Length: 206
Image (cartoon, rainbow, N blue to C red; front, side):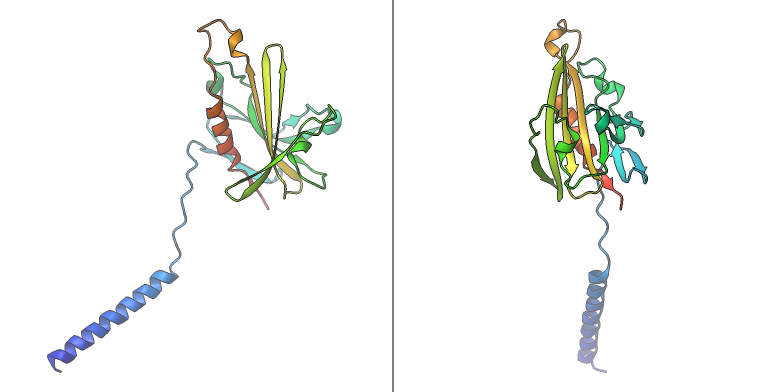
């Protein structure tokens, strides 16, 4: 065989090898993307409640939690995740602040307003929020008494049945009522960021 013929066969072999390698790479499955959960090292999964969620170390879990602020005729069951004691220590933030995942079994339309007190007569305004492809119905209320402040925000999932929602309950004392230097003002934005991070890990089990 001539030298020219050998070179031709060699180049044909390289072309065939490159084509085979290309087909293999096209068919090979892409590696799964790694989700960064940051400090959410704990996992709660409850098939009876029908959801799973991630939360930080130090949070206290209450699987028998019942929201009672709407009266005995409108009790809402769920699971409560109370902030770690270190988060509130030395600040004006109440150690009873929490994020909860709740459900309402009988409803024709799942909205955040269902999870907040409507006894005043006026309907709690809601708005729609879309994050990472998930649609939320969102509503908020505030309350005050004896130097304390209470803020609640509910993120309901409109397409769930039973209707499911995450509630932020933030309790704090008026910072100006403390003698100077006795406590630090809590970082509200940092707490909201943490709650948001937790909420986005809620997975409704099919």
